[in-house]
Image 1: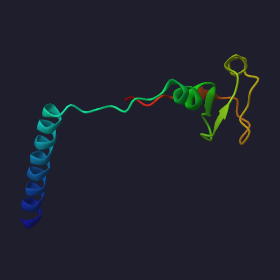
Image 2 (image 1 turned 90 degrees about the vertical axis):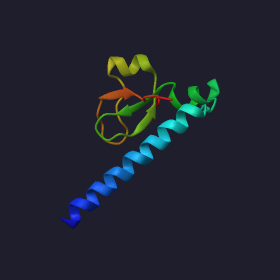
Image 3 (image 1 turned 30 degrees about the horizontal axis):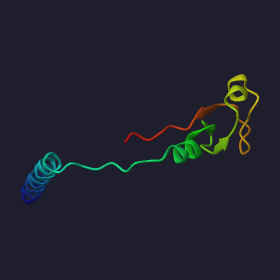
Image 4 (image 1 turned 30 degrees about the vertical axis):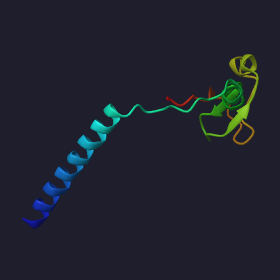
Length: 87
């Protein structure tokens, strides 16, 4: 019985906290950090990630599509472009 009451109290506390955060975000305009184009080019341009071992490498996109580039670490040719984070 005590465990059920503790769970109910924690749940209620979580939802109260969630409602406070939601109301704060509506009232305060959240500022997003401006990212310079040079930075995005350095981090994401021609950067590929190995689908097997998750290592990053820089390569020519045309050669990756043709399958001429392989991972330095595991030898796999399964590469994908590095994903940009959603901001």
